[in-house]
Length: 395
Image 1 (spheres, rainbow, N blue to C red):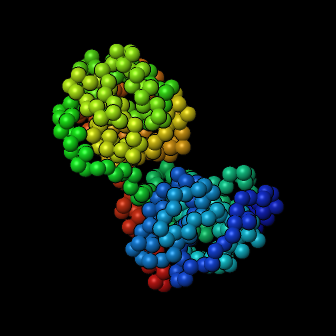
Image 2: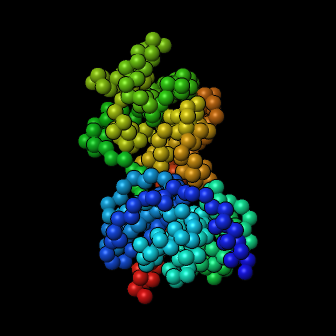
């Protein structure tokens, strides 16, 4: 009775949502797996799962998400339907999924209730805490408990997350701590011949990399480098400006301040006395992550927010320095911070101190190894989920 009342109140209070007028292409033939994530950050694990389902099992995959997502071959991405009984019925009538997977903990009660009525198997993965969709939050009797009861399996990322689901009323028989799903590899490509040649050029010379550096953070990076040179006089700073068109002006500015500069776009090679190496090709960023033991992520200190996905550097073994402004990468920084796999700084002085500390190879290696472990985590969880889906599809 409480669930029915809660769902009624929830449905009466709904607003028109994006997605109602999205055209639905014809349903793909054969089994269809439906994946749902509330936003692009949460969708990372589901995107890798979708890729595996298509590549390994040849099944059709529908991925619903409120944010635009990078395309995946063989996967259809759409906005989720408005969470009302009418739209939920229309959505499920059209797609007729054979299995449904929700990520993180966003519950869409009308959609889940309709799926449960049709006896559609549901699983929740990467669970952090149950909640209603944004702008639909409120107190509705029995609503979250009832929605959670529809899931045959609820996979929490850790023990605190499991407690959050337990307090919300998740069935004990369905709840388990599994960790998070594997995410798509963030490792960027590079020209191996170029990497080998540059590694030989740098030899044993220490270097660090400022990735996508905005103009507002240039002086902080210069200051950090100036301080670090007192400890390691052969240290080389590689800078990729946020705007590649600024590379020439940055080179001239650095020279006017007394720095010994080489500019890659002008075919200048870093000499033993070179202190700054200016690069301006964003396509080569994977090259510099591989060569630099330490990376500072631009935009995170005094910019508008970090401009690069920190998992890119983590996946290639570069220890990460970053400021307090995560931008759209808050979840990734949260994971790295929880694993002590990145070094946060709050000012130019902090940046200089952290850089000096990481000039110790042992400390850099520990930070980089921890970051790599975070970036590569989850393969076993994804494989176990794939096996579970296959068993359910087989009956």
